[in-house]
Image 1 (cartoon, one colour):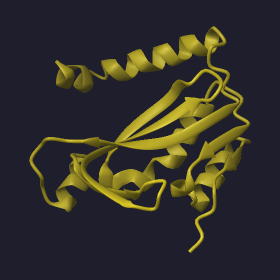
Image 2: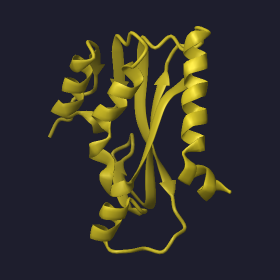
Image 3: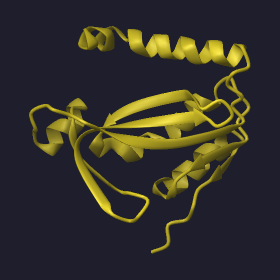
Image 4: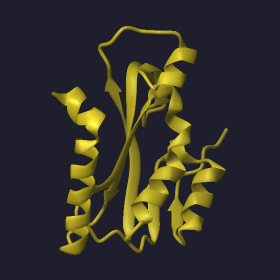
Length: 149
């Protein structure tokens, strides 16, 4: 059932309709948006990294948690953009774990569509020039702790 919903894009359309209705009703303010990601573990057969990158299938991912510990998993990464006033998701994207860095700026543009975003709040994992540029491109300010090496 889930595979059929995903292949027809129905879940995506339902989510986008939900977000649009929340914006129309004033539930989603959209001026302050927090963006983060979550690991989604996959229980599927592992394949070479090159094939996973090409097909978008699950792959090994790693990130540092808030305590600086490296966390690894096999699966996907879900990127969420949440309106801080209502705690409602404004956009979401999924990617195989190896594709994480490609999705930050896409999420900025998707969230900003139809709202007047003033601030994007992100964790230090997003401290990359492209994320600051993406916020600036939609006339918003990115608030991201700097990664100090």
